[in-house]
Structure formats: structure tokens, C-alpha cells
Amino acid sequence: MKILVINAGSSSLKYQLIDMPSGQALAKGNCERIGIGGSITHKLQDGRVYKEDCNFPTHTEAFQKLMDVLSTGEYAVIQDVSEIAAVGHRVVQGAEYFNQSVLVTEDVVKTIESISDLAPLHNPAHVLAIRACMKVMSSFTPQVVVFDTAFHQTMPKKAYMFGVPYEYYKKYNIRRYGFHGTSHRYVTARLAKLIGKPIESLKIVSCHLGNGSSITAVNGGKSIDTSMGFTPLDGLLMGTRSGSVDPSVVTYIMEKENLTPAQMSDLLNKQSGYLGISGVTSDDRDLRKAAIEGNERAALAGSMQRYQVKKFVGAYAAAMGGIDALIFTGGIGENSVDLRREVCANMDFLGIDIDEEKNIECNGIEANISADGARVQTWIVPTNEEYLIAEDTMKIVNSL
Ligand code: ADP
Image 1 (cartoon, rainbow, N blue to C red):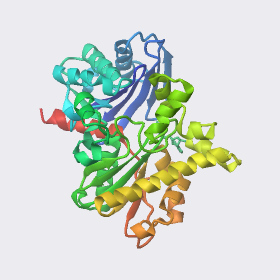
Image 2: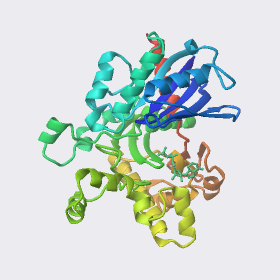
Image 3: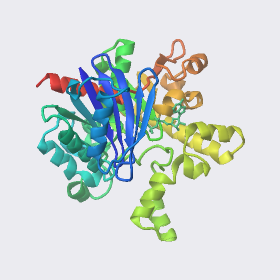
């Protein structure tokens, strides 16, 4: 069964055509510059890459081009669009309406649209992509939506409420939603399989560290707390995002610098984090290079994030009454030997102890990097959100 996985932004349409249940990605790529021009980059399994400049006034033209590239010409991977059994869309915000993936209906689209205020950069784009897909593909092709927030809907109220007047929860739905749910769900389920224990019996701390980073406490397969909050700005220091700060810092800077809410939001989302602290880069690899070359602020940014990760691991072990396994995933979690070393240093009081040789040798691959005899299993588990979206889509379609 071939499933098309779509991750749409306001000017882009990332895709993967996945063969299920094998999970093999037959093709992947991105339609970019929608609304301001257009281009498609289409990559095949054998490494061949096709690029074309196009004209994409809207997501519909981009979707049409995608169908053409997938099914015609030298870079085609299917003979006919009808081979695509279903489409799975990543949706950032499902709020309290969705605690699992669902089949797309008109009501579902309207609900996603109705919570656009909570994810103004994402939900409207997802809706555009769903509607483009309805226009271009046969109306018989089922579509499924998979939410970043759904996995975290199991959090207890004490974990998801903020200490602002309760009326704002009622009036504006202000609460912690958490994000990266598809990744945390994938890596924790995968880990349980890898160590051969039922997920219901495990207390896991899952660290997804990339440009955007979040940590989740997963107790018995359920998210019970997570570091991202109302938006993906909360929690850890990230590439360009500040993570948690004293809320007074926000009002103080706004007053001193005479900033509007939009300018302050830009400062916190795009000018902070690694970039804001180091002044040179938002990228972990470049940050490390700069630190080695003697840039003290680059070294500070890296050590701030690692310290924060360590604190979350400790906090979530306390929240769950213990920890059986620790997962590193995401671009940094999977590929930074230093980060894993520093986070896991002096954590044997919790049972966390990694083997430095394994940490180095297994960099970037799925592996147990725990020291012999460590009470906690520490693993690198490369994430695969697209696979989980395809799997949810397949399950829902097969149940129709
Ligand atoms: P996003 O949150 O955009 O999905 P990623 O998970 O791709 O981000 O992570 C990107 C971060 O991972 C960057 O800071 C990058 O420097 C870091 N990184 C380190 N090593 C690698 C690597 N080998 N491949 C990809 N990213 C890496």
C-alpha cells in the first residue's frame, strides 16, 4: 500500500511516498516558494535528484505538480496516481479536539481551521494542503490527519495548566499542548520493541533535540509531561528559540525596546536560542566548531542547552517516580556525541551511565549506548515521524 505523507507549510509542501508496511520511502521532496514563485526538488531512493522551477500560485498547483512528477516522466515512481492508497497529513495543532489521528472529513477540516489562532503559521497551511489534495486527487482517496499535539493529550491537568487566571484557559484555551508528539510516540514505541518489554511497563524520558527541541516524560506509553507548551517556544533553548524565560523578561524587554507583541514574538522565536546567545549561528554543528575555535558565547550556548536537558531528565524521572530508559533523537540528539556525554555525566545517582566508546561508535545510528550494568537503558533512536504518519494512515484506511 502506497501512502503519501504531506508536511505542509505556508509556502512549502514537503512529501514522502512511503510503501507500507515496509516503510520504504520510494521518493521524497519539497515543493517550495508557493505563492512567491515555485520550485520542486524530488529525490529518489537511488540518489537521483530532479529539480524544476515552476509556477505555484497556490498549494493546488504545487500538489498537481507533485502528482505529475510522481507518476510521469523519468523520475516517476508510480504509473498512475490511483496507486496512492491514501494521504497522511502532519498537523501541528489539534488542541483538545483531537487525541489521536483521524480520517479527514469536512467537519475535521473546519475544526483544524477553527483553532488556527493557536498555530497561525501552521494550521491554515495544513488546511490549504488538505483542500488542494481534495481538488487534485480523486475524492475517493482517503486522507488522514496526524497531530503533533495528540500524543500529549494524556497529560494530567496539573502538568498542562499554567499559573495564570483560570478564565484564560476557558476563554482562550491557554494551556500546555506539547509538540513533537509523533516523534516521541515513534521513538518510545520503537524503544520498547528494541528492548523487548511492553511499553506499559516502562518509564521513559524522550529527548527530541533538533532545531526545535522538546523532552517528554512517557509513563506506560503515555505522555505525562512535556517541555514545549502553549506553542513550540517553551522549554529548552533551541536553534533560534529562547525556550522558557522568566515571563517578566518579556514585558521588560518590550518596554525598554518599545517592541510590539509581533516584534517580541519574532525576537523570542527567531533571534534567540543558540543564535541569540552565540551571535553567530543557530546550527549545532557550527556552534561546536565556533566553540572549539575559542568563541566563548558559542560554548556558553551549547552548555546552556545541555544543562537544561539534564535538568529536564532529572525532573521527569522525579515526576514518574523513576526512569527505565532515556532516548536521544532529532538531529542533535542522534548526532552529537558531546551532548549525550555532557547530559549523561554524573547521572549515575539516577542509574544513567553511558559507555563512551559506544557513544562515539554508534553516533547517528539506532543503538544502546548504556554502560554495562547501568540500571537505565540509554539509547539513540533515530526518529521517523513520516513512518508513523504513514502507519496511522494505513491503520485508519484499513479499518474503513
Ligand atoms: P528540525 O528540528 O528542523 O527537524 P533536525 O532534527 O534536523 O532539526 O536537527 C538539526 C540540528 O541537528 C542542527 O542544529 C544540526 O547542526 C544538528 N546536527 C548535528 N549533526 C547532524 C547531522 N549529522 N545531520 C543533521 N543534523 C545534525
